Amino acid sequence: MAFGAAAIWFAVVALSLYASRWKRHAISEDAASKVILWAGVAFPVAVLTGLLTYALWLMPSLRPFADNERARLHVDVTGSQFWWHVVYRDEGGEAVISANEIRLPANERIEFSLTSNDMIHSFWIPSLGGKMDLIPGRTNRISLRPTRQGVYRGQCAEFCGSSHALMAFPVVVMERGEFETWIEARRDPSAGTENNVDGRALFFREDCGSCHRVAGTRAQGSAGPDLSHIGSRLSIGAGLLDNNHESLARFIVHPGSLKSGSQMPASPHLAGVEAAGIATWLKGLE
Ligand code: CUA
Image (tube, rainbow, N blue to C red; front, side):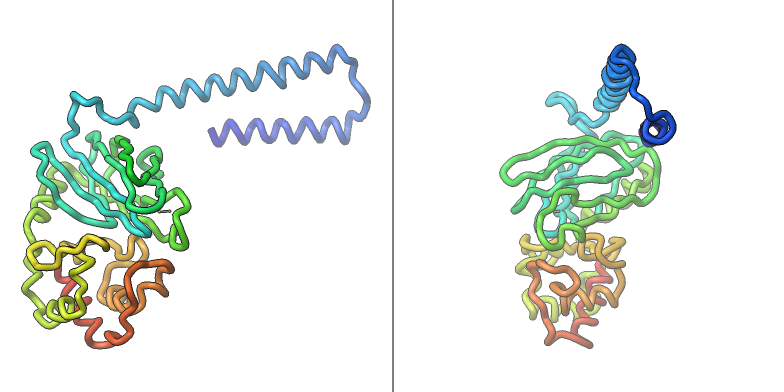
């Protein structure tokens, strides 16, 4: 499409230069009618029909599954200002909860159910397929079939507030076996929950668990992203920063200055050792 559009653009520019610079005399009405008929009607109809046919031919792979079909893997995604709640469901319906990152097996059609908690957001992984709105009070469906392993970027594609542009997520496409291993490990609470007791105690002292969930602990909040295995995610803050101790600690202290409009309160009193302790505990939740 880009090459076709470029060719047409150059042709139109060349024709207008030809008409305005080199061949500045009127043409007969008969010739003008022919130009309009062929270049103004027939040519666009042919090109647009071709493009429409091509687009319709691409569409079946984006259609959701019929009610009597079942995807092997089903992913529910809920958008919130400005993060993504992600739930994986296998054939048995068993769920694994995560946030701000999506992992998928390659060469398999995966169905997504999309909804929102607040604004209209839009789910878009440009390298893997079309986009679809997440609308409060309604569930939209889309399916994707990633064919190549790798890490792709997903992005909210509908303006949803001050940090709309910072509402992203990495998408990791893995081999089926590798994906199984990954998701199996996420069915149980992270082994890291008992490490770094200081960080863990601070997390509970600050009541982080009333907004965030950490599987296997009493932190069962749902207002903010699930943190159960956050240590093994590629990024934090919905694709905002690389996931390391330093950025975790920074985000804990000043979420709003890194991400304007974030609902998470700032905790300047934790700056230093305490934020670093919580960050260490979180990084250990692999
Ligand atoms: Cu969510 Cu833009």
